[in-house]
Length: 383
Ligand code: CP3
Image 1 (cartoon, rainbow, N blue to C red):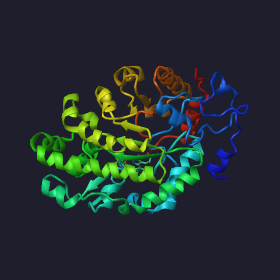
Image 2: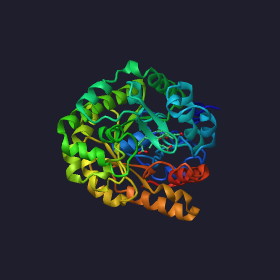
Image 3: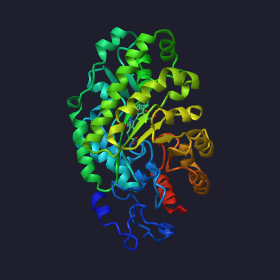
Image 4: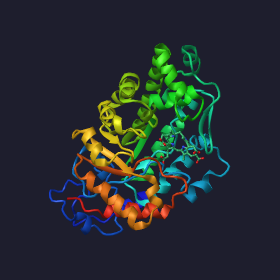
């Protein structure tokens, strides 16, 4: 049975909508049949409601990197197919994106792709090296490099994205699909360094030394990221997440001066699409207020900052997403449950809370632990 069919069969709670629109939602998570899917409809899902700060009947949950190496069915499907090639095969993209949705009953799907896919699509010579990450053949370090290597992205460059998203939307039924892109700073760091970097030394050197190249590069990456997001939403994605994964390497002052304006450009450029915009980075505890202010509806929080502190920094006008330490999935079950409950308790004070990990699922994670975590979150009583 497909996930869509399964969702269509969802028993409703005494005829009331499972979208949180019921006046008295008290006790609904108890009343709900144990095996009832929790996704809700794609326009009134708990995930979308939490993103918008509307009432929910359960705390929605999904995981960054929920698709991927932690799943044996993923490893089997990907055998012999390079990562970037897999992203251009719609039937593979649909299947990989669906795998965690079927297995865990998460409240949202995240599009299977990568932040470097739009760069590859415009002809940047790069690859994703297993165990390492994106590696760029000719690093970009001058305005001339930008002009030569980074043309604008058009929807025609990524027909497989449109096709995959359309396929997914029909397969997903009531579960919303999250589209995503890499934010300008994070993309720039790969392009400038030539690959992953611990200290982002070359990136910051260029940032401080060469404002013209910095502006040309991040400005171009902002339009590429915005187009990549628009393509996904226009094909049917119901929310977007902008990953500024490595922004946490910056001081607040530098973030505001050199990076935030470009993230804001991307988020502003998709504001008219009227889908929730999630903005996330690793180790960004000191930047959370600024990242929200860049134009996010939902601020993603990593585990190094408590969700309560994060709420104070983000403010009451935005929702939050996070923030269980991904290694807690390796802890004894009772420890995992206690830590997840603490995150859920803190999330009660938020305008809206989407439960997630503080960063991606680690490849060694036991899928059964993730399933138990989803069930634990779904069983949590909302007020
Ligand atoms: O469930 C999902 O989140 C799937 C979609 C997804 C992937 N990459 C698939 C992927 C998403 C949202 C990304 C985003 C991404 N890619 C980010 C931002 C998120 C983050 O983790 O902070 C970044 C920085 C990248 C760049 C990248 N791509 C890295 C660092 C790696 C890991 C390299 C490795 O092998 O450890 C990749 C490869 C990648 N992207 C994999 C997957 C499933 C693993 C590749 C494989 O299975 O061979």
